[in-house]
Image (cartoon, rainbow, N blue to C red; front, side, top):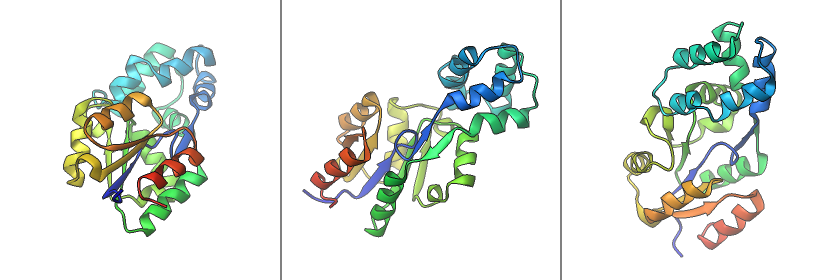
Length: 202
């Protein structure tokens, strides 16, 4: 099997782990809501979906959370608490570095927001080592919407089996496979490494 022309990495749960409970505890300390009430608001509410889809600005997202949660801190305090939820996944970061050493271009392909990207870029040097970034808040669409997959193809100039894509969510992987991409449903670094060998990356 031929080597893929590019390797595309999801970000959360692939290269960095995250835990919204960390942010929820910090936000709850400045409002009258419990951690259990705040965590869903930050993790999968309409507010966060609109923010990560580019329909809300950072300020609008903050104002929305503040209104629902009666948050008493500043936007700067909220931004710091909201973004500081990530920890690196070393075996996958090492895998990315190895792919780069093979002179294969790599791309970030993520449902995310500008606060998260700024935090990761500032704190995790590996994030700066990609050839391109396709992120939902800039595209105005979230995986598995076809629009964001088309943007990755446009940016990279690659299509079909030229693209090897890994993601931890089955619906996102399925959308890539439907476009002819080679895909890996990421469950662990060991499993992903084994599948990459089958795709011509020893």
